Image (cartoon, rainbow, N blue to C red; front, side, top):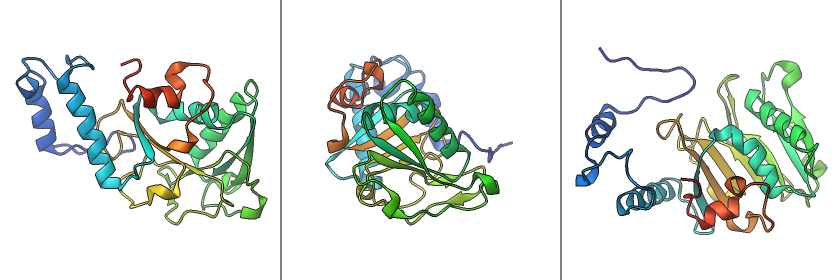
Length: 240
């Protein structure tokens, strides 16, 4: 009997993928080791991470001036990592159309108590139980702001953004966890895209961040593990 999980969370994986993973759990690429035993500095793992990035770049048509990072901590860690890296001393706008957008904004407000930046609620449909995507006037956005944060697909509420809003020239930062690779967005329209891999791409445990190079932070943040520039320089192997 085959059981398919259609609930929110980890996605169904093709049976042939599971069978290949099963076989390689004992001997990956004739290395004599499990794929779970490989050193992150081995030639076998180097080939894995380079192939993963190359395939993602091909599938999403990611421009050369964007870095692709494979990080830990789940997409929720990005709620803090984004303002830490991008928003110091600036405004950051939050468009809240569902539960995950609300969590991102809540974490930003919490972080602003200790880090110098100003999280601003741009629009919210919470009062109507998130039954629609709220609109906003782009002229209300300070063009010097760090970013406008959106969630492209609200799995709990059943709403999605397909046509990106006008943000008065401010970079869009998007949580695309539940529709990455399912919608053909133009990566160049975003400053930063992030997503937990488990819903559309693979098993839980990896968070993908696609960031335009000019948005990489100039100053170090509180932790090297939370520093985009350091992670990019280490090819996502910091702390591996």
